[in-house]
Each structure stands twice: as C-alpha cells, then as structure tokens.
Length: 131
Image (tube, rainbow, N blue to C red; front, side):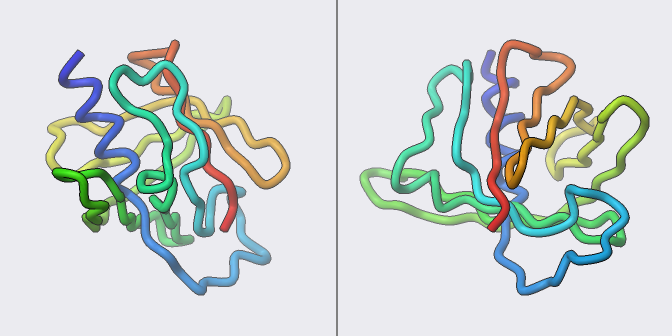
C-alpha cells in the first residue's frame, strides 16, 4: 500500500506549467494538465493545495511536473521530470524518477480531461484537466 501511495505521488509529481501550444499534436496527451480528482487513492485527496499540481507532456516524449502537498500545514511544491510513451488500446507508460520500473496504465480522454488508471492498481485513478 505504501508503495502505491508513493507511486501515485510520483505520478502527480510529473507536473509543471507550460506555454506550449499543443495544436497539431500527434497525441491527445501533449499539453499541460491540472490534477482535479483522485479516486480510491488511500490517504490522498485533491484539495486547495494538491489541486494546484500540474503535469506537462511534451511532443518529444518528455514530461515535467510540479506537485503540491501539505507539509506541516504549509502548501509546498516539488518539481520533477521524466518521460512517457503510448501504445495501442489507450495504454501509456510513464517513467517516474525514483521508481525502478515505468508505470503503465490506461488513459481515457473525455473532452478536456483524462483519467489515468494504473494497470497494477485498477481500482484507483487520477483525473487531470487541460490547463
């Protein structure tokens, strides 16, 4: 369970604001996204602090993020970078720093949102909205 919480934290850590124009992108995920919802993630909720977290997926399969979390009553941020790839059936793999193996899951796009559900913990999901 602790490993899963760290995994979800790391996924949301892949967040950073960007002024990139994603028009003409070959993949729907390219662009900057804001964390708006976390379902069935033990010990984690999206609130005023964590809801500032963003993730940017770039055309060159790199990603960057800023994750916000409460540290002793203060909203603090942490930035990171990594990579991503997609395959058939809406499967995406995100290489998260600090994890020995990439994380693979299903991404479902709905209007200006996407929901990521990790294959190894299919009852949990994170939803992001295009910034």
